[in-house]
Length: 555
Ligand code: ADP
Image (cartoon, rainbow, N blue to C red; front, side, top):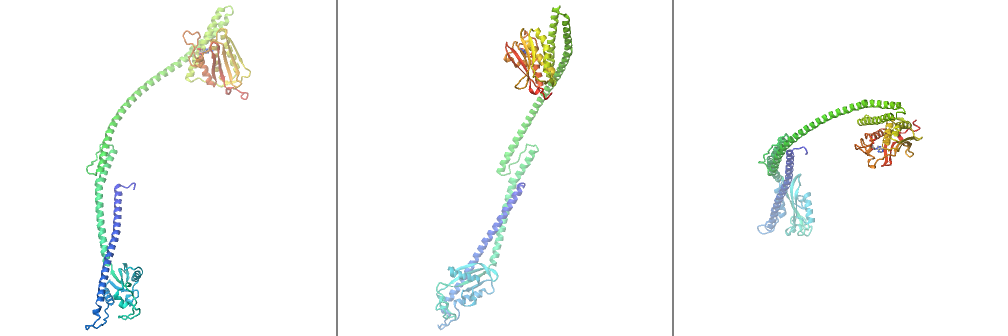
C-alpha cells in the first residue's frame, strides 16, 4: 500500500466495498425471496387442504341423501367421504406435478401408505400433538414443496373406523377402534416449486442488477466528486510544490472549485508560499549583506595579513640585524677584549713589585675587562638560548677538575674584593654526566656574584658533596654577603632582574648571570635553588640528580 497512488487505493477500496455489498445483498435477497416463495407455497397448500376438507365435509353432510333411494329406502352407494376425497385427490394429481393424497400409518389400501416424509409427519403428529408439517423435500426424485396436515377423528369417522374393533363396517373393512380427537391420518399435498423458483431467481437477478447499477452509480458519483474536489486540487498542489522545488516561490493555487477543507488547505498553502517568498527575498538580501560584510572582513583580514607580513619581514630584518650584531659583538668585541686581558696580565707581571701603582692599574684593567668579557659571554649565551641554538654536551665530568679551575679564576677576583674564597670536593663525589664548560660557567657566575655581593672581610665557600639520602651531588656556593629578601629569591632567576636596579646601584652586572645558570641547569637536567637571609648571606645550590651521576658500574 505504501507506494500506491491515492487514486489506486481509493479505486481498489471502492471496488472491494461495492463487490462485498453486492455479494451480501445477493445472499440476503436470495434468502428472503426463498422464504417468501415458501410462504406462498404454504398458503397454496393450505388452500388446497381447505378445499379438500370442504369436499370431504360436503360428502359427509350429504350421506343421508346419497345413500337412500328415491323411495326413501337406505342403499349404500359407495360414495362415502373418504372415497370421494381420495378419488378427487387422485384425479387432480393425475398428469400434473401436483399430488393430493390421504395417508395413514395403518392404511386400508396401498394407496394410503405414507412415504418417508409423510410417515415422519404422522409419527410427529401422534407423538407431539402437532397438526402441520411442511417444507421442501424430494418427491419422486425431484425437489417439491411438501405439506402434510393431520386429520383429527370426529363423530362421522367413528361409523367406519370406531368400535368395536374388528367389526365389519359398511365399506366391508374391519373397524380399527379409533377414538374421538385422535389422529386418523393426514392429508398430504405435494406442490411443484419450479414456477416459484423461476420467479424467485428472476426477482433475485433483477434486485442484484438494480443494486449493482445503484452501486455503480453511487461509486461513479463518489469518484467524480472526489476527483473534482480532492484529486484535481491535490494535483494542482503537487504541481505547485514542484515549481517551489525548482525555486519559483511565487506560486498560487486556485482554491475556488474545491471542497471547503481542501480550499482551507490551499489557502494555507498559498499563505505559506507567499511567506516563504518574502522570507527568501529577505534572506537573499541578508545573504547579500552578509557577503558584503564578509568581503569587508576579508579585506580587513588581508590588510592585517599584509601588515603581519610587513611586520614579519621587519622582524626577520631585525633578527638578521641581531644575528649580525651578535657575530659582530662576538668577533669585534671579544677578540680585542681577550687581547686587552692578555696584555694587561703580561704588563701586570712585567711591572714587578717596584711599580705598585702601575701594577694596580693593570690589575684594574684586567678585572674590569674580565667582568666585561663575562657580561658579553652571558649576553651571547642568552641570545643563543633565545634562538634555541644552545645545546649542552653530556659526557662524564670530574667535578674536582671544574672546582680547581673555578678556584683559579675566583681567587684573584676574591682577593681584589678582600673576600676569602675556599673550595672543597668530598672524596665520595662521583663523576657526573654533563657539559664541562657549562658547569664551569654556572659555578663562575655564582662565584662572581657571591664575591661581588659580599662585603670586604667576608668569605665565599664552594663545596661539592654527595647527598646521603638522595645520592644526588650538591654544588653549594655560600657567602656571608648582603643576602636576598624572600620576595626576590625567585625573581633573581628572571632575565635582567636585579634587586637594586637603580642607576645609582653600586654593583655592576647585566642581570643575566642567574638566568643563564638556571638555563644551563635545565639543559642538563639539573636544578638550582637559593636559600638566603638579608644581611646574613646566601647559599646557591646546584643539584645534580642521582641519574646524572656515573656509578661504579658505569665506569
Ligand atoms: P648580575 O649581573 O646583576 O649579578 P645576576 O643574574 O647574576 O645578575 O643576579 C641577579 C641579581 O641577584 C643581582 O643583581 C643581585 O641583586 C642578586 N644576587 C645574585 N647573587 C647574589 C648573592 N650572592 N648575594 C646577594 N644578591 C645576589
